Image (tube, rainbow, N blue to C red; front, side, top):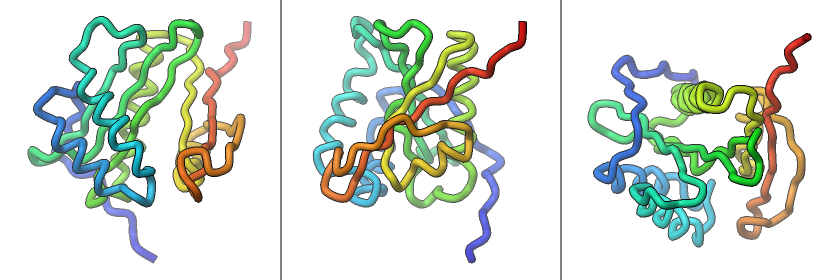
Length: 169
């Protein structure tokens, strides 16, 4: 069994910049076709291209993890207009060469903390595949729905939620 490698000491999580585009695309390509369907690359590119637009209805807060001037991971979240007590996670991925180092967990924790800072008490929703749902389940998310072959044949969609903790009155 391969031992989990440690998180690199010089890891920075910062907001996405247009100059991060190629590093994020490399992260996507390194995870394709195992974790992403063919058609999703164009959708991801559209998201990245639109991040600088300030007139979006549901703006996305998007971040990158930088290690030694390389994009090691990227991920974001948004607040749906029609669900004021909810945040949605989007396009989270760790570049293949950085898998199993704890970077994904740190980036997820960063996003969850940022969401609670901006919208205290918000539930967090996401959709992922059967390959990634155990990662989220270990961190407290629960499955709300499974749709077989949603993304592509063999890539099922798992809708998940992380409800805020109930505070006793």
